Image (cartoon, rainbow, N blue to C red; front, side, top):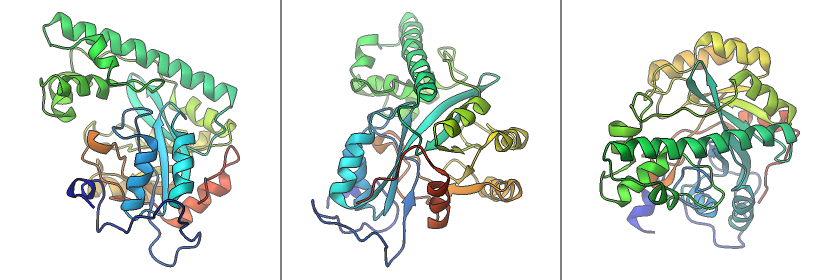
Length: 312
């Protein structure tokens, strides 16, 4: 196993399952469940099948693929999961907004053909797409060496476009060293080049996910990079609307945030998850650095009626 691969996950690497080998459904050892990852179907840097392979290398037993506003990677990831003997939880990270503040909602196991959910996701993706062109135009007008064509070259056909693809174009051109530098200099929410895009209110998003048979869990509500994005009052409002859980353990959450959010989840009767938010080379986040307990995943599966977990 190469040194590069060991950087994709926390802890000691596991032995990789060979193609066709099946991993037992009831695991005798530690059950490692990571419920938040991204692929080239949105802003990750690895194809869905590669994300699955990395998860097996990392010793995960269950993986959720949750690309932004799309189910495009589900089929490829599902095939890879069956081949490599790992459970796959199909999911989506749904873009939401409240008073111009970006909020993310993880939707586990929804019906990918539900017309209302599909329509909302398509509207958000289209808005993301046109927003990208406007941002690039503003940057180019100020002399930053980036073009729409160079950014489009970073987006896989049919993938959800986002600011990370502008960052990747700048990295490819040698303007910045990595995505983080691009966001710090030009792509952050407080940047003069920032352009908002359409996203549903989080209450509507929770209702849409539930109506599609999915299980909604709020993602990184106290992201350290963006501050306290989701207030306790809003979490209570979302719980009333049907929110199932809170992503409590996340790289962007401080120890105090984890304690507070865990206590809040208990008081509201919500599930508490932990995830990596893996993006391949696009972020420092490593597979399995935060995980979810098997009892919590079982509760998610019990609530879901939209689609099923892909079994090895």
